[in-house]
Length: 180
Ligand SMILES: O=P(O)(O)OC[C@H]1O[C@H](OP(=O)(O)OP(=O)(O)O)[C@H](O)[C@@H]1O
Ligand SMILES: Nc1nc2[nH]cnc2c(=O)[nH]1
Image (cartoon, helix red, strand yellow):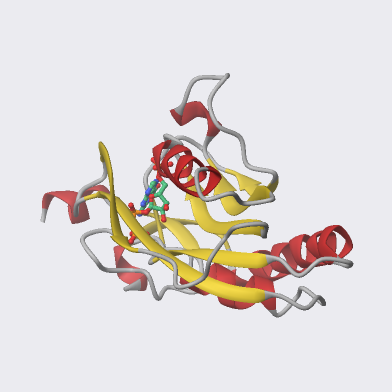
């Protein structure tokens, strides 16, 4: 897989350092609460796994699966709910964990869905934020690892046609991979 990567943007060590920083920030925020951590499948799996180990709080963990990217590099614009939570969110302090906020459509969809179910609070922690991909008055993440350039990224959960999620770092693919 390494041969398909043109440039590494965030190394494994840098990502782990960032998980540690975000984890201690979130420990302070949720110290006296018991948050419901919602991992947004599938891309957020590696980040969620590393982040929650750095959060020294009592918490519950659940998973929701939504999708708007269908094998390519562009959002279809329509977010679909593929798997719902198992937990009731009424009165809960919800922390969404995602790998990237890009156009923000996924987040808008998720916040609307859970607001209607009576969550007490909703915050968003994302490893990567691509603010250039949405209007300046668009949705905002509360806790951000890296502000990333407006490019299509892979690795550490992020896929291209289902591949590269298991790379331990985040990078940019060589252009010929898209043409292959
Ligand atoms: O801000 P947006 O433009 O909505 O993009 C962000 C979403 O896109 C990716 O998920 P995707 O829909 O590709 O599903 P996946 O995590 O299963 O790959 C990523 O994991 C985010 O959830
Ligand atoms: N693989 C991948 N998926 C995304 N979903 C939203 N933005 C991205 C991105 O830059 N790369």
